[in-house]
Length: 491
Image (tube, rainbow, N blue to C red; front, side, top):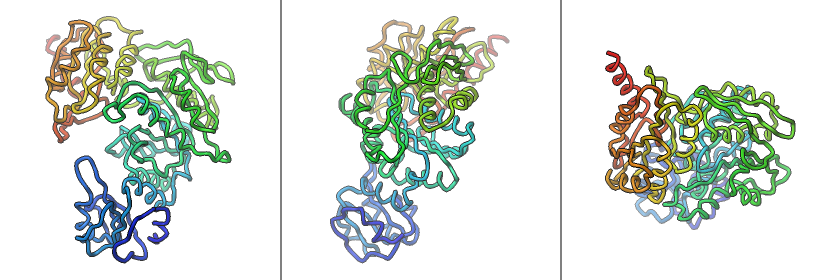
């Protein structure tokens, strides 16, 4: 692309050196530099890209985007801007010719339910015969093929690259989990959403946002960023059961669709019934009453299903087709996912890591509980400590609780467990810092007919200790331990 054209929308301070006529590649990783690349220096939490600018130039970069002069760089032009993190979003969107404008983009934000709603949308769209892409916590899913991703909402460059790739693969729709961090840090710059969905807002990430008000305002950016062009068909889909929806409705001039279980809404669920195989409910909307069924469990997944149904209806799909697709899609990976185990117990893995999500996970099994519910809950080190006692308090709904860690990072086990156990409402619990050992302990406590919920990691197959990712799977450890426990017993 012509470099002068690319830089037109960037308010740069100064250019040191002579710009080339064009560049063929944009990257933030000096190891990824090719001939005629534009290298963007990003200040990360642990690494500063400015320290790799000279190497990038040696590797073939002809333009460096920087926040300061780089006298050591001799082989490339240096474009100095105020904030490279903000600039890269505009650059990437323009470089890839604004690919989001050529697809129906659906953004899902909220504390809990983002992964489930986005995953349901993706699966339902494919059932509806559409080519679809999905990006979020589980990774980048392109027409059914999964690729890993580092964050719930990827950096602005990676985001544009994924959207461009989805467009090139012929996708008509792309569903994206939109985190509050991603919105505040500008990772969605240049993404044109058609539908913005809100799930809920509960206690989380206050180490980053400071207050619930700031956290809520961050989520609201998704709705304000739908823009003011009323000639475009755009819409907001809001959870009528969450009071923040009233605020978000004021942030956009576009049509608002509501869904809910408890409060009045345009799409409402009632007569909810569930067992270990799935959930049924009655959907009431402007078109009448309809029976709905799905393989997912929990009242919270009824709310998630309503969000997906409402969004697809707003996008123009027929309600009968939407409900038919809902009835056959599989559970979202790691979200109240039943583990197939050859033992007389039931095990679920879930991503619940907030007080609200923990309560909902436990409520999900209440209708078919026969004996004990054993709940394992962990929380990450060096993150929001204020939610820990509330997490344990909600976990106390279970008959037996195992308090453990999630990704301990640099925080000691005793520190994490000490904060958690303050909130326990009964004495039927154990504190075990090593998560693998904690999972084994949870299984060892189970007797025939018991239910175990392993919360906090969900689909993840690693654990972060200090700054290193180590292999870890709640699912595999539980399967192995259950097999050992019950085979030994039978023998």
